Structure formats: C-alpha cells, structure tokens
Image (cartoon, rainbow, N blue to C red):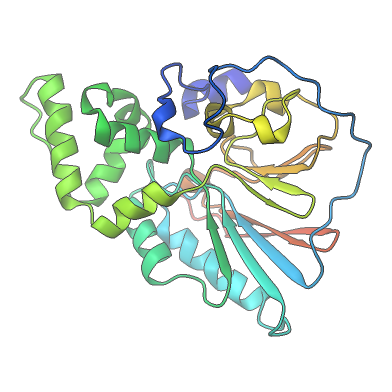
Length: 288
C-alpha cells in the first residue's frame, strides 16, 4: 500500500536536491548523514504549554473552498477562549497543485487570514518542486507530472502544445512568473521546514529515524515515507505531519498524520492540541 501511495503521490525524496535552497544546518556537508542513535525515549504523553491552543492544518492542495470551511470551524472553536490565551495555527504545507484553486488558496492565506493568532507556514514537497521549477524550468517535468499544471491554470497560464518539450517548460515558467503576484513569490520563499512547540515537532512529511531532530535534513522533512511511517516507537517529540494520504487521521506512538486527501476526498483535517489533549476538526466530504 505504501509503495502505491509513494508512486501515486510523488513519494521518495529527490535525488538531486539543491542544498542552496536550504538556509539551515549549513555546517552539514554530506547529503546523507550517518545514522546516530538518538537517546531512547520512554512512552510519554506530549504536552502543549499552558494557556495555548494549537490548530494544525493538513495538505490543502488547491482546495480553497475547504480551507474557507475549515477556517470557519476554527473560528467557531476558539470563540470562547479567554482573550489572553495564545492561539497558534500551523499549516503543514502542500498548499498548491492537484486541486483547481492553488492561487486562490494563497490569496486566502495572505488576504483573509485567521485573525489574532500566530500563523506558521511550513513548506511541502510541492512548494519545493515549484520553486525548483521557477529556477530550472528544463527540469520541471516532475512538478508538472504530479499536479503542477493545475497550479499554472489557477494563475491563468496556458502554454501552446505545439512546441518542443524544453521550450514548453521555459514558456510555462516565464508566463507563471509573470502571472504570479510578488506577494505569492515572497510567500513561497518564506516557508519553513520545521516548527517545534512543547513536546511536538511539526514537519511536512516526517523525520528519519535514528537521526536527532536537530540534524534532520530538508529532503527527509519534505519527502520521507516508509522509514518514518514504519517506525513504531516514541521519538524525542511527537511528530505531526501530512504528505501521506490516509482515509482518517493516524495516531501512532511517534506520530500523528493528518493528510486525508482533501483535494479528492473533500476531507481537510485540522488537529487541535491543548495541554495533553488531542482532537480533530474536519470538513465534510464534498469530492470533485
């Protein structure tokens, strides 16, 4: 099943990752770190700091309609919180591709955001592929093959088919850059690879087991599947992630997965964390 998901959803990290894209951990020279056993971690009950409520939103993939619905549910959920409480909203990445409204998703996040809260925007593998394509269009076939053309169409970009493949990719890149607002380009450039709060570690895809969290590399944070998904014991912190689609949220000893395939299932999931509690909000299924 995992191999099927990897093939269908673009799993597996890129072999030609450009380390110039990463502005953290610059002292690490090797692409693949040797496994270093992290200290053993006893089973624990992860906690969020007091007077804080965290909302974690899974992969959106161009479903602006579902994001609006989920934002409404979140507003209703926090309406009775004391004004002095800290509200944090974490987006796990993959805002774009596959669904029809990638541009509209970014418009919503920038122009009509959830009010009076801290907003943390993480990078997904689809945003990483888009950025790679904008720099190197001749290598952009990977992005277009797993949903990128839907993003281009959401920016009203259409490329004539009767040209060479290389010219088609360059033309697509040039037109997309021209059509994409500078605020959107700045948004994609500002995305983070990770976020930590309390006993939780938030990333797009997961982490590589056996590597301390402070030595995790971007390709794994964006792309990893089996080594992380098949791990079955607690880690340094509870990892909250998206990237791998499941019918419903997954709660395991080391991870909580909340990618419920919103772009086709109509179920966009939000994990709510408060103290030691975990609960979920989810949009109703309105598949396209």
